[in-house]
Length: 195
Image (tube, rainbow, N blue to C red):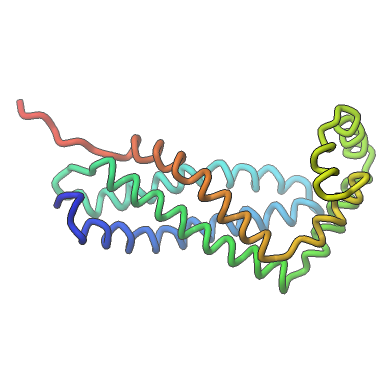
């Protein structure tokens, strides 16, 4: 099968939809761990690990797609790239829906309250003071109208759920093409040269 047939896109898209659901569920689970980590700090490490491992999960799903579709042993770069990119885009839609539902219908106030409480602990307060002293928050404060870190959290409370969901999709549109490029380079399989 060549990469210019309509079946090429249809098959890649169909598998990408399924794999996007898996990646989306993985992403939502890592975000849920991140939210819980505000009250149970040790869960921050597994949440970060899940974020890093999502790239490897995407590669594993692309390899599984390759095994099913590349019966001849050839899996061109274009097909690997398209499948990985579409999987990431579908995953972002699922994650954005979950983020929207959480901020619209869930207890997002608890997240901001936990963030506010963690900022008041001596260790975090010292870190924030150092960052403020270095001017790290100056642009963010100016953009939000906040005068301090507490005001920044209040400004984040005012952001609409649709904006948070849109950030997920925007971030994916910026990063997925690059990540897909590397995964495609690793998962593609060229035809073997005759001996």
